Amino acid sequence: MFAQRTQWNLAVNRFSRAIEEHRAAKRELLDLSASNPTAVGLNMDAGQILDAFQEPRALEYHPDPKGMLLAREAVAEYYRERDGGKSALDPEKIILTTSTSEGYSFVFRLLCNPGDEVLVPQPSYPLFEFLADLQDVRLVPYTLFYDHGWHVDWTSVDSAVNARTRAIIVVHPNNPTGSYIHQPEFETLNALCLQRNLALIADEVFFDYEHLPGTKVSFAHNQGALTFTLSGISKISCLPQMKLAWIVAGGPAQLVHEAGRRLEVIADTYLSMNAVVQLAAPVLLEQRRRVQPQLAARIRENLQELDTQIARQSMASRLQIEAGWYAILRVPAVRSDEDLAIQLLQSRSVLAHPGHFYDFPGEGHLVLSLITPQPEFAEGVRRILAEITAISA
Image (cartoon, rainbow, N blue to C red; front, side, top):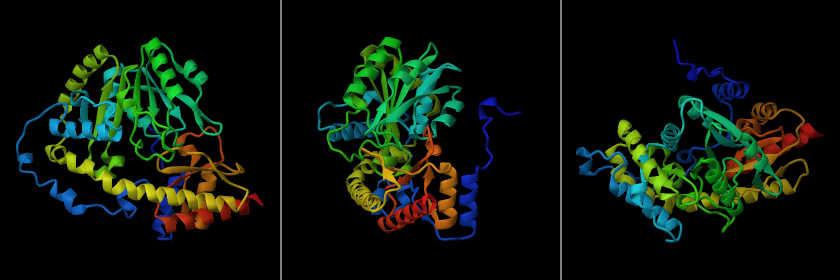
């Protein structure tokens, strides 16, 4: 009766079941997997946000497939200011969506016939599998490897590209590795895409959360290959519930023009963006000025705390990160990451994500959220390191 594309394994895995049982028992839980910025104690300007939804024009209906011009202009202004005014974005090359997930679906539909392939980095966030399945697209992984920082394995990219490949996804910075695509890799990607007639899909939702100044180059201004840059206020302004995201099209003018015409039809078919959020877009984007410094300070303090505690022992280390909300703890691979995560939950009441959740190639990785409130993070790390020391003795 049901479509083959939804034939997922929906059984609850061991780790999820352990979390459910722990919470059902109402036991203490130090959550070092926090990803919801509205639930970690940030100081939001609630009055300004709520007032922005009192706009009388929201009672009128003036649909625009790309989204209201005032909202697209607010997005363009965000990029102009963020990138130092180096290159202004044309609002006509911006299409608003309710989420980056919807943005992916639009771009997959634009580029791919059923069964076509898109390259995706590994490790990375596991959402891509479901998005691709729903659009009848096949994902093919390429490898990021770690050697004093993260790098693209170009051999894996070359071996993955074939006649059915339509695009390469870059997550910039990557979640959870926290690594940017640097200028040499940027140029190699452009050359490869031009040579093989491929598009780039750049996910930049964590772009603003940089730890090492001067290391990043945005794909939003890329002219070297047809590029679709995705972002939104979920991370920029820490407002995932407001459902405002976008696609920025860039690259050779003729390709961008044709992509824009087709994307406009796709967007017009759904008209998913609501007027209230679009009218509030300038205010919602302004919230970044209030929340980003708070998160930056917390991330910095939690990283310092993590490094201080790691320095006191010899069983675990931290991989280098350049940006984002996560840190990767390298631990002895004496058992599977899932087994370790379950043991930490059951014996130490600490919730941390196992590396396999993000398709790390081997065991020995835990992913910790750096936006966890500081006291909870410090105690959680202490317990994790104590458990690792105990099981490795």
